[in-house]
Image 1 (cartoon, rainbow, N blue to C red):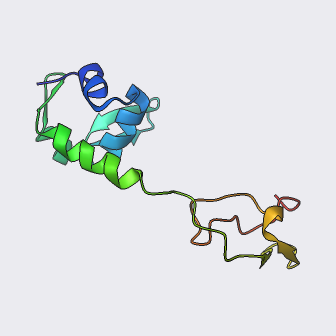
Image 2 (cartoon, rainbow, N blue to C red):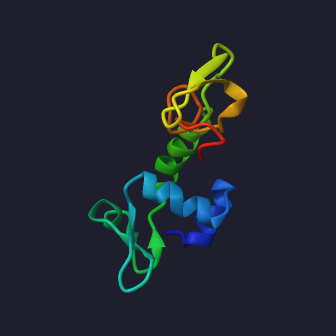
Image 3 (cartoon, rainbow, N blue to C red):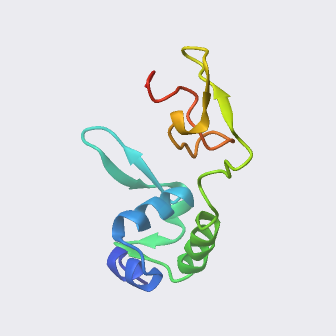
Length: 114
């Protein structure tokens, strides 16, 4: 059984990243009321007891770390221009910010429109 700090130390990640990994594994969720804080999900309760995490959670979180090591920003080498969805002008890729949310790795709006 490990505390949050011990898990973070074993996985060699900051505690905030650990919380994010636990969230990605569906073991935690953010509760907004009465104030923003983390809560254990039903799935997380299988691995958590009285302030300690079961040792088997380490393997699950290591898998999540491996998934995250894939590049978040798409390869933009094939993109030379893109159309801004706000001003509708076709602009070079450097007129857009990077975005991991979009498949092409760029924001939908140009820097000027944002």
